[in-house]
Length: 610
View 1 (cartoon, rainbow, N blue to C red):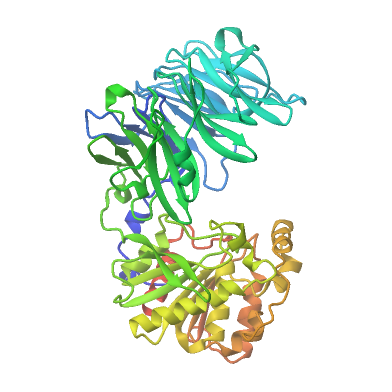
View 2 (cartoon, rainbow, N blue to C red):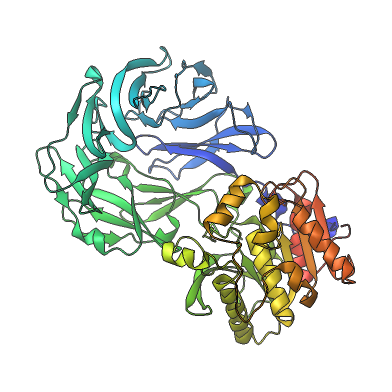
């Protein structure tokens, strides 16, 4: 593979990125905790202090370390519930355990089910309500309460069938909890009194709607945010004690998918996440006036799990950002400013990441959206790689990519388009490739490539694809062979028809659902890679794991045999790396393979061994 001298210097920083499997704020929004794997067989816990009287920080929680791996998380805690005093309650198959700020670990008993609702007391104290099902065939639920480390969790009683999502505390003392009771085919919100479990009190009749689901609550303001159904359409409303429900017409004018994320504890405001394609924003809904306003500052980065801190802490809205260029950070929005708190890792502290953003490019019939990542503008960058996502039922999004950052470090700017058939733009857009695999999407890729070359006055671009994206890349490079200078294909398939006989049941079901084996009949000709690869002129690097459960490695082996039969020279015209034990993402965890891919993309260097 590549020598140590040619390895990109970013790798030690990149591997400090945390792979989080759970994240949760305390009930007051003053602290947060997350479970993460270190990539070396350990599950650890991070603890965030978010009080506005200090800059805030994140550190490892002492006293918690569990043997685990990214591949197998069975038998370990799945939830970390933080409290304001710095302690964390862990819940999962092993039971409940509390780790105190100094690292002391205390047993918290066991639950006979996997809790589907975990609600810490609204005052931030060490008390947690658990709701779930104990396996009763009639769908009934049970409520359990953990009231601190000095006594085990205890069963409060049985509840009727519930929709176990949404709801929340209705009072600051934590004695009343709003749940969503199933009534026939519908759902209605009701109040659970912890002193009389089993007896639910429906919220007062909410006129006009065909059904209401409680999404969020404001315990200090005794306010409930509802999703109410009117003639099959869902609208946001709020209800407060002593008042009738209020609807918010302004939210119906927001373009895209609107998701309520957090409610101000004293009521009067809700943070809404709005996704339109890949474009995201956070808006604040004033539940007193019904007005909607976009939050000032980098709101497009505030797209993760959110919480609103208590009034005494400045009512800051917190969000765990998952933005493409800012890993491991929490953003806090206040009345006058935004603040950022990183996770303390080298990756979290590093400010040299290649920025990412969204741009629109001409497709074959209309504009398509793309993620662009790089230190240089794609029009003037030394090189540009067009990156094609897998799937086909998938899309690129503004998430942090190790590989894109390594490409950028080689002076290459990435354009990652979402052609027709990608998800996230509505069913009609996605189903344009039903019965037309490598039809509209391939046409969009070719059109984008022509446009970018024209704007750069550049003869050729680079192609990268993984899985179905590798299939598209191989076809594009064969159909327009002089348009591409090199091609990197990770775990490619040859065609849906060739993949189907040896695919898993899950993959075959997906191919059937999208009618992937139907031939596309147009001027471009065959969509079988083996029929077209003789036209390929660009150097090609193929990487495949020999334990790939989605696209068997035989797809790449057959491709290599065909290239060899055509007289192509291994190590010069093409390279092939088969990763022993590698799965569908064979580069994962390997510095050597990531570096080899980056050097090939950036400079055309073939791996020394194939």
